[in-house]
Length: 256
Image 1: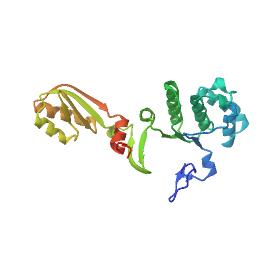
Image 2: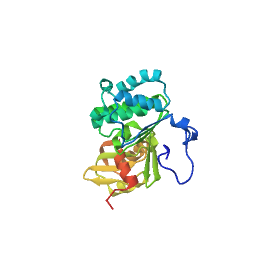
Image 3: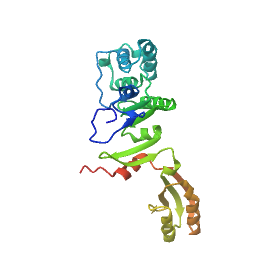
Image 4: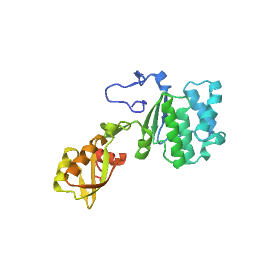
């Protein structure tokens, strides 16, 4: 809807302070769809030149910008090669290049690392960090949650068109922690008392696990366990992976 590809049934949306239908705003947007179809008879350089001109760039600027962006995505040596000879990963790279050719202020990327090898995914992460550093806003849609964790500042979970949760990945206050403790002599009173900080304490042999919202409560938890006669050999806090948070927030897909 923000890109004008689907018409909303109601309400209004603004991009960069203007209605999404404003053509001048559209020229400040970069977009890489998941299922793209480029003119495969064009060379890599010709495709970028075309998209640059569609965004209002002048020929003189494109003579410099096209090779610059091709080098950025690792396709400099393939500038004169036709797209019909590109692999899936190379097409993904040229797709990212066309989204960035005009240095947009807002960038929409749908599964940008699809078809890329580990080096290609790292390249995309580095490029997105550079775009963010220059002041651009990047909307990244992906089911590769590990990529989201290392790339994004904020994550939004959407289910059936509704936002069900929004998390700031850079805020310690919103980072749920899993704590794994090597503990002996854990009494029932010790476990019951943990309810003051967590509802998920689980003891198996000498392995005590629980989750907390902040590491700031760990000293109080340790003092409580020791006061109850628990022998703590090791306490290790770790951030709960985004994939587990996804399952917890969205619910498991059981194919129903």
